Image (cartoon, rainbow, N blue to C red; front, top):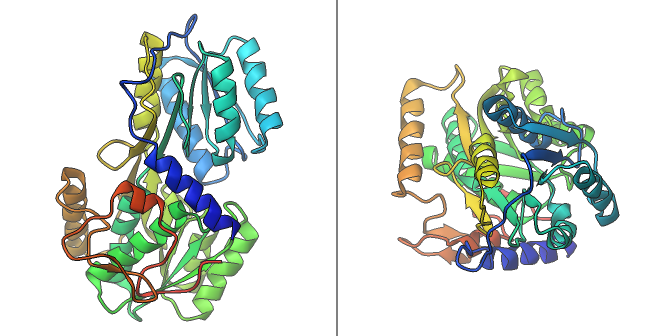
Length: 361
């Protein structure tokens, strides 16, 4: 299947994504820093792009560095190239992109412009002047899953998932494993929409899960449609990308991006120069890529305390979300007791774990 092939490409990229500080040449941009952000969707999508744009505004507020942005740039090489080259002609010397589909074209453009700095999320390629980055969202999704496991009364929870790449699959699995930590009898029902951003399909999928009898909804989607369905259905939910409690009181936890913790220091480092790309960076809660916003008023204090304790274990390294034993849906073992899944195994996650009900498209 095409999605499995993409997952394998991501897996291969991740294996090559070791920080290459010894191999990367230093880059000095010319002139005062000017940062151009490039978005594949509208900046107020409520999810991925909006989180990037909020980080842009924080950068501007914290540093006074000039920024600009262009919305709706398709993940097509010719479309991206036209926008990037226009910014370069206008004197912008830092390009901040935010699309998986930009990777190959961005690498080509970066190689043609060695005095321009580039970074991209989710980035799977790198060069002397190009850094890729993404976050270990499974950490924050695990914590929100704990909320779901604690609040369910039916032991039946649901997850609205996007495109079945590894970076979506690990969120489904982590959310379920977090729920299982609190409630070993819970089952997670998942349906994939095969779209990152489709409010109509997200809403219909969430409603289908409610009709199946779930009493808590999680998501890996761009819009708050799942959260709104939860509120309409009188159940609780957890959000993704941003704090989605701004849309509904049903949201009891959100797995959020903390991109300002990456973007602001990276731009400062580029501006002060010389800058050296670190290859492809995979950022956890500790490093500034993701975190949780928790918890809503329905979550008991003892549950809040336990979630915060587990978060601290993740940060200090004493706990890994994917630590064994972990079993696939078909009963085969992923890793045994005492083992931890390495980054290659995380990026190569083309399966759902035991206890998850649903199929990969």
